[in-house]
Amino acid sequence: MPSRQLRPHVKKCWTIPPAANAAFAAAMEDVLAVYRRPLDPARPVVCMDEKPYQLLGHVRDPLPARPGRDRREDNEYVRSGTCSIFCWVEPLRGWRRVDAQPRRTRVDWAHQVEHLLTVDYPDAATVVLVMDNLNTHTTASLYEAFDPAKAFALAQRLEIHHTPKHGSWLNIAEIELSALTRQCLDRRIDDLAVLNTELAAWQQHTNSNQRQVDWHFTTDDARVKLRHLYPTGCRRKPVTKAGWRTVPSTYIICEQDQALPPQEQEKLAAGPCRLRPPGFFASEPWHRTLPCGWPLWV
Image 1 (tube, rainbow, N blue to C red):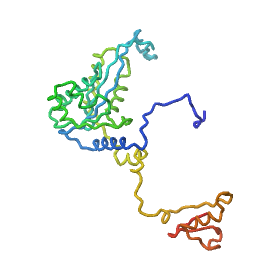
Image 2 (cartoon, rainbow, N blue to C red):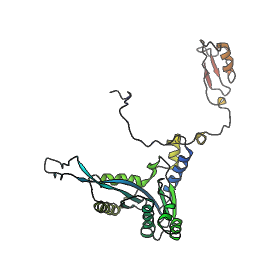
Image 3 (tube, rainbow, N blue to C red):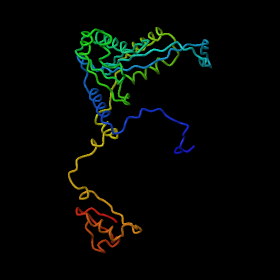
Image 4 (cartoon, rainbow, N blue to C red):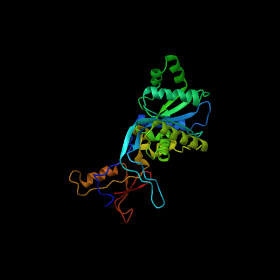
């Protein structure tokens, strides 16, 4: 099938950001500026994300692998419920924490934040938190889970930066969840306790390697490669001089034009130009030049 032929039966799921959107550009540049900060134990930059996970069990026991034959699993499975996996990442230190909970309510997120501030970073003055715009990811969730004094104290130690809508690729924690899915969750797990055991093993192995995240995409890159996401006013330079004085331009005379005779077209073309006398260029009698000397062919 030719590559340019339409295929209406095929579709691809894609995160399509809004074009020329000021809110997207502002949130994107805010997150990119945070990623440029150096490592600071007093103000660590932590990324957070979560993903739903379906607990699945086997109807029939799989057939183990043997020489010449891979492991075989029946395509039928048993649903054992769902849960939510919370992922916390400090990119510059190479630290991660993953935890699976039965739900992902505001209270669940608030308790995750409490663990982050009191257990993971008890000595940090402020934790710079980068996350998406999920409705539970606000300091209001702290007030639903704790008394006002404790909620206020926890909120004061947070500096929150939200990724733009349809811009989840800016969240480093989402990248870590993708790696976690490939390395740890590529099989059926039907029990929440077993899942947390597997997550703890992956977490310990990854943290022992201290695999850091070296983020290369900068604000300067975004303004060039993603300039179509910026509002038109941000891309337009102020007009300081007439372009026709320095930029070559072309005026094409249409001899078959029924609305404007060629003679009138020549008058229009001669406005910003200087008509060379006939024969000035032997090969092209209809050659004109701009005042600055740029050639104009008609």
